[in-house]
Image 1 (cartoon, one colour):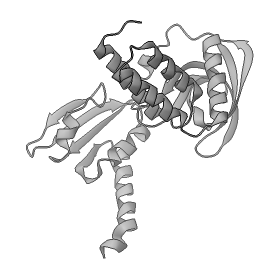
Image 2: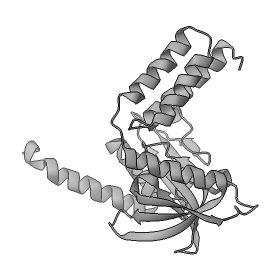
Image 3: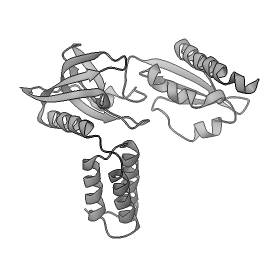
Image 4: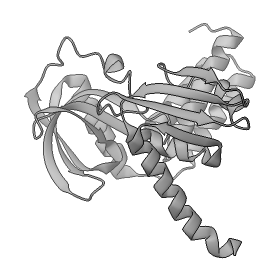
Length: 250
């Protein structure tokens, strides 16, 4: 593979994002990065990609997670059903037969997900791979519907969830607005400047749950104008935080 310098740097960016995403020693990531570094001309970029592989290699090993990921990868590649023992965030443990349609990574956290048809619910569902306690590859084949496009399916999602379209409207003050304007946060976003030097950000996304931590990360520099559900959730967090710290402010 012949790459110019700028193309090699683009791969270095991808390698760094891969390393940020992997919070464990994933031997397949290490092997892929080692091969990428070896395939590039000797120099700065190759050396840095090799160093990224070393950093991933130094992390703790989670053998159970790697085995689960390998089973899901094989099921996805071979179009074979997989039986999952899955523990939801509410600690409910269920057994499900799932047809993997796509494996996706979160853009905001070191987490991976399998999206596919879940026989238990009779619908497409999203499963966080870290919550899978056991995975068994089955012999039964399946077909991915011809009209299923994972990128269209995830188009509205803030991360990996689409629970229905919801319009979010956020007002940022003049302190935060310059940072907000620097990035494209979502493909649907619409930015409007306000007279006080701030801005309003409007987006149509697929889940309030996924965006809540991001909104909270802006602290008092943002106000949620819509929807009411998100505004109430952020206000509740703010009230609990005030109670937590009020003894230090007395």
